[in-house]
Image 1 (cartoon, chains in turn purple, brown):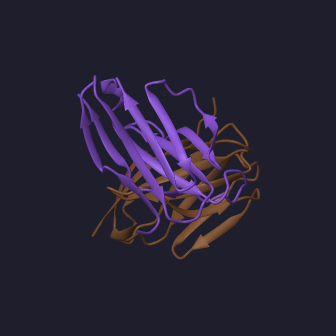
Image 2 (cartoon, chains in turn orange, brown):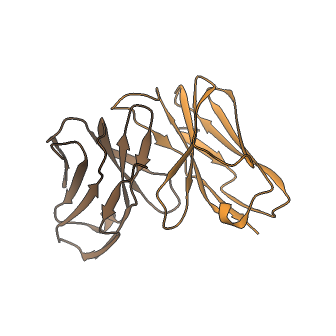
Image 3 (cartoon, chains in turn red, purple):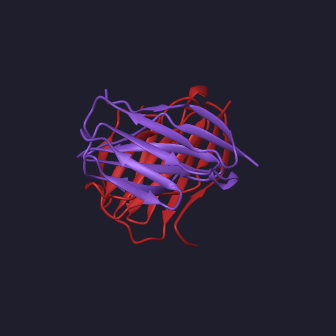
Length: 115
Length: 109
């Protein structure tokens, strides 16, 4: 595997379910990100982890819970979601997380549908 | 709240035509990036511009950063069907990435 991978690619869940999204980067990067991409809205940064420490949390509801066990893996745990949480969830990684030339490498995303 | 407005939102053109996409903000950024996203994939970085007034070329794509580092443009010459996709600008601040509203481009053969 190369680059940034995400599983599952598609997920349908009910509002009372608990599920997790997984992201893995094979690039040796130190920073990882979760983004939400909804129709008609800009890409929204949710969380940033740098060297396994959460350094950014953009007022995301507590029903989204990130976990970064090591610099290669990032999870997003989901529970009691709402239909408006249906979106494409993108994971990204970068060498650092500050600096003008910081390039983020994105995974293909998980298409989440909440019924 | 920092916002990056892109225009146009949608663009459908014939192969061979030229086009320009704009990315505007009232905020100053330390740099600005352009990404292209194709269906079923994540965004892929095309270019980073850092200096006010900077112009960068990537084959048929020309990127410019505004003098005040608040806006940017992407110009495509002789568009091809392979240029079809969602173009996103992203303003990079000290601790923030702000993505633009996106321009969905379709180039017809």
